[in-house]
Amino acid sequence: MAYNQQFKILEVPPIVQELVAGGLQEPPGQYVVPEQDRPAATVSEMPEPIPIVDLSRMSSNSAEEFTKLQSALENWDLFLAVGHGMEPSFLAEAMKVAREFFELPLEEKMKYSNIVNGEKLSIDGYGNDMVVVENQVLDWNDRFNLLVEPESERNYSLFPTHPPSFRDFLWEYTTRCKAVANLVLQNLAKLLNLHEEHFLNMLGERSITQAVFNYYPRCPKPDHVFGQKPHTDGSMITVNFIDANVSGLQLQKYGIWYNVPIIPNALVVNIGDVMEILSNGFFKSPVHRVVTNVEKERLSLVMFYTLDPETEIEPVSELVDEKRPTQYMKMKNKDYIAKFYKTYATGKLAIDNMKI
Ligand code: OGA
Ligand code: NI
Image (tube, rainbow, N blue to C red; front, top):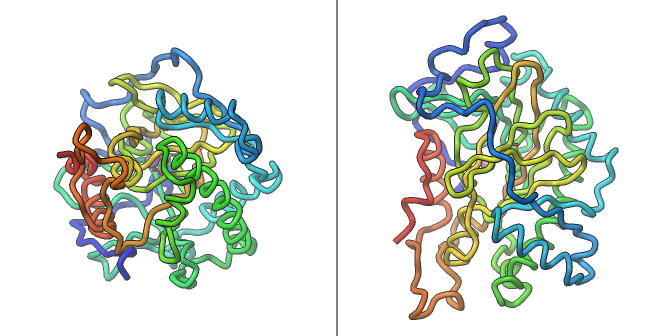
């Protein structure tokens, strides 16, 4: 199928959680970031905080919330969302099922491995970075990717039966988070002076939602590794629910790195590459990364929303004119997905290659 592509790899990457359980003192060489690229121990204070947008007010057309959304995207390409209707107890379940999954014995988790015949990696499944180039620096992070929409494409053999609530939780989260994504997409269309339903109409029945559970183990040398290397997301938009106890997500703006603050039970919503292209560069897909720490492991549940893999991605025609010609190359979404994964592994940005 067009989304869950397979990639030839040079080697099978280790599971970071297993390395850490072995009690190592130093991250193995494969994870060590060259000195000039390492994360600094301290990052800059934000000149002004990232706006917190109340979605319940935005859904009743509050001009004030709409302005907050606008300013958040202008300044940060990302915002924090509250008023999404998901109760704290429901969100706590996300962290609980994630933790219970990652705490399973390795053999159990390997039933859901993304490794195919020891030589290829598929997008979906449990694992780590795919190794596609020599001397690749690996992320200090294990992840579990699952396509959740379209429902007809779910690979049920990949959805764990342990913990027992995993599936039911994820189905319900998919539904509830979709409502959040739809509301955001309607308001992004409004910000571009497009018809409110423009992006929702583009989504259609075959559009993809990918759920990713991220597990970032403790690291004895956090300043030598990345939990996730600097990247943009290959999605239209991304909705991220993060462990309330452990920070680590950082955002780059004009070359400076900032911590994304933790607001308990808020979702972090950011623009992805596909939206940057559709909007002809009006919205930007922010460069972000994850740093680890010595004391605590960290979890996140990230939902990536994108178009049907067969759709051509190109700037919306209403946003292209003589004054602002198209800024991006045209490409089928499935080809962009492939390009995205390969480029991510090398530490470069796929979106940079799309700019005309
Ligand atoms: C990602 C990502 C951030 C986080 O999965 O693309 O940026 O907080 N995750 O885990
Ligand atoms: Ni990301």
